[in-house]
Image (cartoon, rainbow, N blue to C red; front, side, top):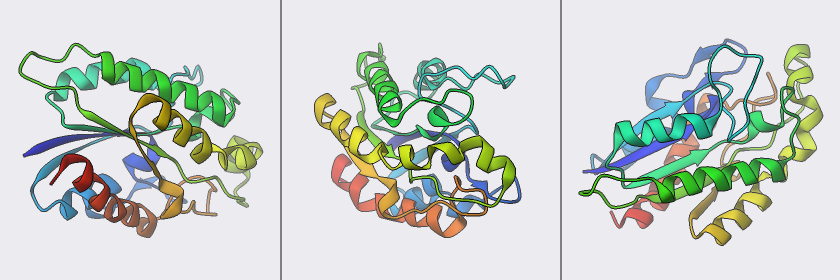
Length: 212
């Protein structure tokens, strides 16, 4: 059986807009992907609300810097056949106000961590798939509008910058925004249908990458 790590933020965790609850297990995209692989791979959910690529968030008690967390998770879950990374939305929100380009440079660092990681001798380095998160959208929720309303146009640039990074770094790329749209309830998270659709759409992509 193949082992896949799904590394991301609240879109991977399954944050349900408007409720602050979590989408049901079976519709969250890592689990929808696993179901579509029919037992040929184990997909490890590793989503954290607020996680960034490489930027610290001084507003939260938890460590949200993905570059800090990733080496620990690679150690914990090795050997791995594929690492899927979808991050960036939190890079451009209030705490950091970075650009999509800056998030793509953070993604470069995460790719390097996986590629240069000291894997156990019995393991081969995994394949890497980076995903551009879906663009933010307008919301009437005042708090969330203050959080990331300023970054809607910037978020539309994720796919272009991430595709370039994938080509330069020799990894795989998928634009989540082609199948998942953000929920106007809060402007940044995806509803149950979108997260499940993302997992389903990834099934043929992952099968091709892993020759399943």
